Length: 105
Image (tube, rainbow, N blue to C red; front, side):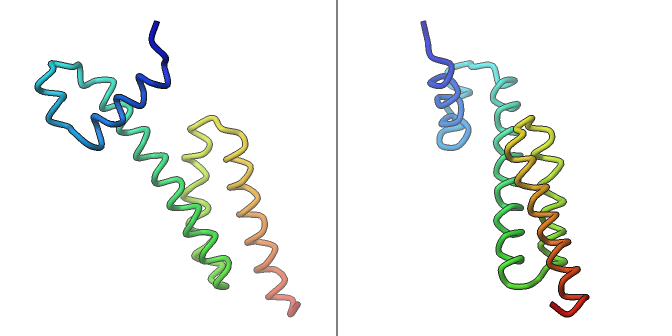
């Protein structure tokens, strides 16, 4: 019996490190392509979150909001309620900070 996590790890190593092995071993590329798309979405998500946090810290609230709103649909698609909540919290904090600036706080 194989472990699903080990299988996914093996597929990720094929995608990232040695794509030529796919052709040599006649492995079906359909699950690999799906996994590659999923990994790209995850990487984009974390990039957007980091950029939102960085811009928020630097006081660039418009850019922070832009990146948070780019991350939100990816988090919603993933089905991870925690990450979705993190995105929504970032959006709320950014709006709150913008409102305080407008009011002079």
